[in-house]
Image 1 (tube, rainbow, N blue to C red):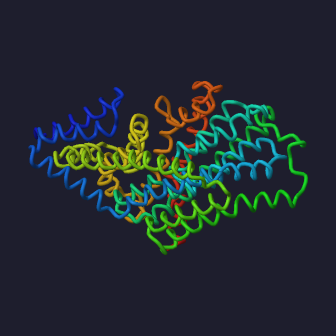
Image 2 (cartoon, rainbow, N blue to C red):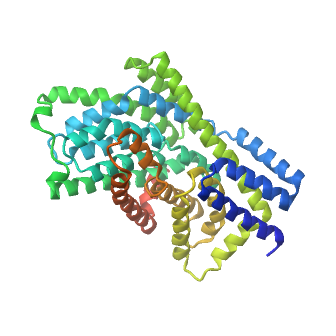
Image 3 (cartoon, rainbow, N blue to C red):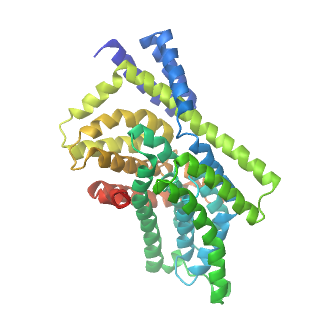
Length: 445
């Protein structure tokens, strides 16, 4: 091992240690890269490399879709679309046991196709459904788990911002990666709902049906509520995801259409006020800056790390482990799962996935390279979704705690752990049956 390779590994260890201590991920990535870059590559080469990465990030024609999709999500939230969806599904499934669980999870699934913002989804779901579940006698742990798990679906189900960033890293088109994420996303949502329903029917105290006095007696009124709540959002989703999956528009073009569509819906529902527009723009700016700065810092760190040669050392070490190819894949997934606790997804996607990618490309798993990369990308997305539910960092817990202070973190963590087990089972099913992720891309092709 050369000195540069040793310092590259020390750079990686230092970065992980500093982040575990509690320092900002973005600044840690950037300053660690610059410090070790100067020590290994020299001042000129390090700063030229950082400059090229910054310039390359600004020229990337995929990244402009990020703030547009974020704006679309926040504007859809201001348009009260999620509240309307939840009310419609709650009335539709009112006679069923566990109807509020189903309403929460179905609302989260549909709304995930209009926004990839986990924090906003968990917060709004907590505000809408949390108190109602408590007043209806629903189990606190299962309720907290359903809200937190449902809100995290936005990171997996397109138009996920994470998949936009991951596409260029894997070298696959974003529309194909989107199509590969649909199967796992809907499977995961279905497993969530089946689990909540099964537990409610085995123990009615966990999720009683909505009292008859609170149900809609008129079928026409119920149908009207469903049409008014579902059809506009379905049209918005079709205008964005439909054009991306159909190859009619790039992700950036579709995101722009989605942003305009969400604004028009807010106007149609009379929710587009000057205050709402300003708040949406501020939230979009804050979230976009956080994501894009993480992307920039991760790119600089990754470039310096690769130049030290340490990535080849890690790849070579994992390749030489006496495990079959499936064992190596499971090892990589286990490492990503653990990394998801302290790290934000941009750091994992842009720093660690490129380290593992050459190993994955050499694995003989019975798939051609294009399908192998799509499958791997979808599996990584499901894996990173577990990071939002895995203590102690699990951000979904803190989002939910903010709007539901009556639920302790212990209750929320215990509820989330049930759904995290379901996520791991779905991930294992994906690894055993690649068709879960690949059937839709094959159908489109």
